[in-house]
Length: 92
Image (cartoon, rainbow, N blue to C red; front, top):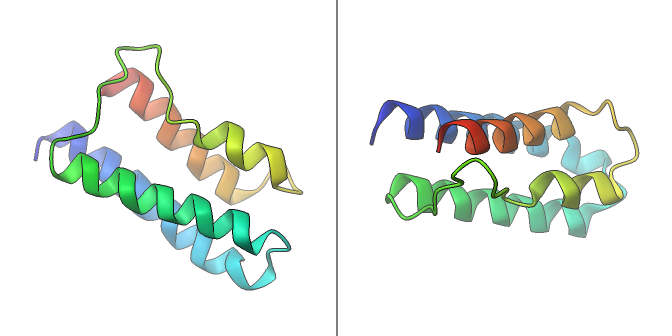
């Protein structure tokens, strides 16, 4: 796995850790669980070299999904998701 992919996987892992912390207090438990499943899938795809490249214009759709239901737009989880999307677009 290359450096950029490893950095991407690290960002996904950080978002998953934040998700674990907010899961008990989340009023949107089902939606959060869906995002966690997506993150796990994306991580596996990246680790296996199967994640489609962004080419600078494709997103993963995570930020939009989370911003639709998260109550606090200053949420650490939304920030972590934004970092994933940004890294994906610029580096993969």
